[in-house]
Length: 99
Image (tube, rainbow, N blue to C red; front, side, top):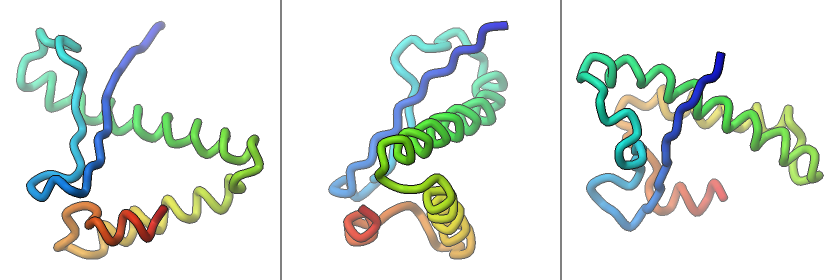
C-alpha cells in the first residue's frame, strides 16, 4: 500500500507573529473536509518523525553526529519545549544558539 504525505516546515525568526510555519503545498489534499484535515495532523507528525529519522541517519553516515547524540538532543529539545507552558517556538537567540 502506497502512502504519500507532503508538508513544508518554514522557520524564519524575523517573522514575529509566526516564526515557525508548517504548511501543505497548494492543492495537496485540497478536497479534504475539516475533519479529515484535523485527522491528517497525526500523519503530519509521522511524516516529520520519519524525515527526522532520515536526517539523523544521514548525519551519522556522513560522520557529522552520532545517531545516539542526535536522538538525545532531539528528545531534550522536545522535553524543554513541553516543560515550559509558555514555549511558543524558537526565538531568534535560541535558534542561533541551537545551530
